[in-house]
Length: 144
Image (tube, rainbow, N blue to C red):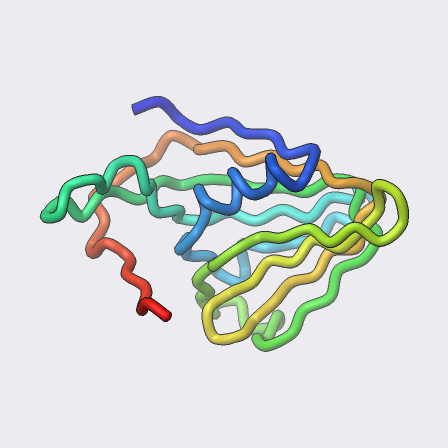
């Protein structure tokens, strides 16, 4: 399989990235804001939803990097950002416009944790980093 390299410049693009990173596992220590570069980045072990198509196939996880540019502010809730060994499961990424191209990007994690990024405009990049391995289990979600 080929490695993903995606760019999001609007909400439709971000929905595609969000679908590809659903159920990614992220260590708190692997997230950070570079204020001088105005970039928020995170490393993750994303579940490759395209690899686990069969009922018995558990699929695979891939090491990936995601970053957001033009970030003006970062706030967190629902987890301790000072706990470097904390592990979060990413559920979705959304964008809410506020004024023109500016808005809020929200990363929602299982258990109610969130990271909110105030951005001048939506610009995100997701790249697989090459490492891939068999997943221990295929993520499952309860139906509403």
